[in-house]
Length: 327
Ligand SMILES: [Zn+2]
Ligand SMILES: [Zn+2]
Image 1 (cartoon, protein in one colour):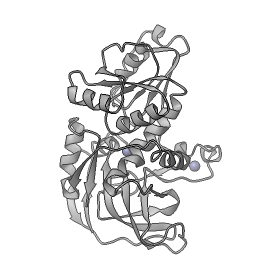
Image 2 (cartoon, rainbow, N blue to C red):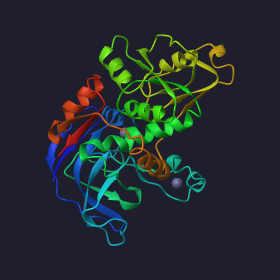
Image 3 (cartoon, rainbow, N blue to C red):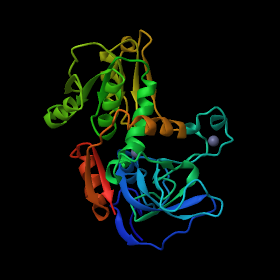
Image 4 (cartoon, rainbow, N blue to C red):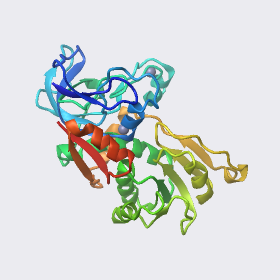
């Protein structure tokens, strides 16, 4: 099978031909129809996340059909369409797993990081972490539900009952979550890079009541904010525009350092928190909700072999919505 392989952090992916893997007892072999390109992939490739498997096939928003089934696997049949997300394995016995917080599992393993992912024609996955996908979504539009959608959904839940919601960084996750937030009757305030008119227009098209630069003051005090951009300076910026009791949710896996800030912007029971990974329950809830909204995903597709171009475009903020690789 053809795959795009990371040999060392900080180097471009190389196109290789690999033998087709066979599924282990609990695994399925999936023929990949589409795989999303996520900012986390950039962090892995750039060496900002510690100790990836190397060499590694990145990619953790995988949509494909099951073509082979392991000896003890039986959740899916050959030909079933499945999604393979970031969460690839949990131990089931650590204290986090036992309290229903498998996203924090001590021995969790992640697709496209510690397990080979979907920048390839085929991928293996533990069937217990795969999901059936809503039929309403064509292959190219489904990958962004699996990470941008899921992590965004978890971030939205952790923002609490906020009616006026700020979103910093209007990329793949934000464009999905803005639709869900609006469906839930919230008002969305979109913050983008200064002067990014295209992005601000895109946010307004998706129902944002206001869109502006991240250093601008919104017309109303906000109840909560979600930061999707990997920029630590946005944490104090968001604290300055949320009301007492409000929460700032940092939804990325990596962020530049947060500058020091005066205590009075945290005072008033404001909270700063992060969101880590996802649970299978988040996935079930979100995948049931998405077609009801209905969430529409904006997608730019690239051939698999153009993975380096897609990553570069994402890094430069040139992707509107989500970038998706098609083998
Ligand atoms: Zn565990
Ligand atoms: Zn992701």
